[in-house]
Length: 256
Length: 356
Image 1: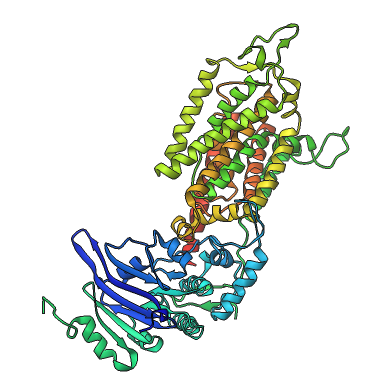
Image 2: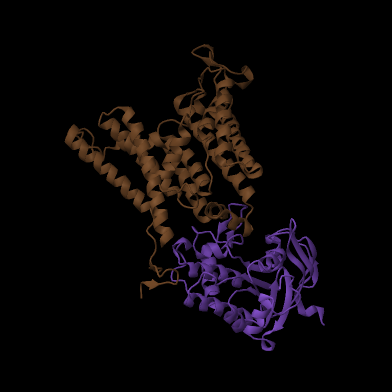
């Protein structure tokens, strides 16, 4: 296998909280341009896995390779600077700011640089925001309103548009449509299709198997902190995936 | 299609509509309060509150009253500007009144004249070396005091993670203690002419307006201002987005301390003396101006313009009560009620928005 083709790889990734083994020996590979879904029951280790990759938490053991070299991020900021954009379950948005300010939070554009008192280039940020919303097909009627006044779906779309707009090397979404209505879910799924067209690799955590089969190339199943299956979409079906999730298939289960 | 129904509970919300600026509501409140005093004045005193009724003066408004209204709030208003950016970034500063006291004492010690009416200065703090210094010396010493106190506030809050309320309460008590210890309770007086001009006549108003415009621009157009709102709105999101929230907070409190010391310099110059009890309760007046002006104590919302309007409401109420010849006691009570009412209104707005 060609190493250049791999954007993210984890070897033996393990996370323990005290005596609890939340994640055990996770060996995971993501190729460039590939969209992979991570599925599993609650507490199966999906979010724990993401938190180690994005360095929101520090891993107990194992190695992470990103973009051709081993990495050990100290925090989510370093991960982001390296090119991993994440949509977390809890929205990382500032409610009192408008859409451009949220999109550019922490990476503002300036007209004039003068330390903390650098003058913001609000016009340019607004224009780039409208562009980003256009490419991601997100419809926000008035981007100048604080996002506090927007519906949950619109806020989630802002959060995802922010990720998609700056996406460089890898996008991770942790249940991006969990709280959304039908229409808004469709909008988020369109953004994901857009990422696929642009060749941006994606890890999608989702409980929605219909969505997973619609969107991704490969499905990775977590169960009790371990990866129990990695199946290409055309090799499997919903029932098969459910069997892995519930433990009917996929190896020893001490309680079965 | 102006109204759309969204997925979450199908609530109605018109996303194309721009929200009405908070400052407009505050301005309307100001107009209403002025109107009330105008009506009461005509009914009870047979005189106009706002308009000129003296025949020997040829102006439409009662300019003397307008000047007093803004003059009496401009010094606390300078503190209010600093407090506003602290509250917007999700904090609180209780130390500004005491910083005023301490700074006034220390700055005045470097602003004294050697000879008063042919005799040595009876209030001299230092020896001859500190007499008749150029005005820049007390100004820089004073500013340094305030900036340092603010820096300590900010560093405590950022690095020890103690709540801003506690950190600045500590500074409040400590700085007040320092201002009493500095001259063992004695007032410090007889400043140089240069120092006395800083707060002369309408100078406090000029300084307040210049600073208000400056800070309005900072809060609206710079990265610093944007990050104040971001941190006050959602601190963890701000941190995750790469904002160094610790450094930002230190800067916010340092600037607040600097503005408090500037107010102290203006105040001691205007009064031609400094006393240990100077600035008592100023921190609460400044916070009240901000809150009345629509700055949310939850952080993230408000503006310098709002605080300036809040300061004017303050000034109008004080002048109005004097005009109606009501006791100062009533002023305090009404001030208190207005502060609580402003916070209650803010809470209601919050709830209204959470459903929106």
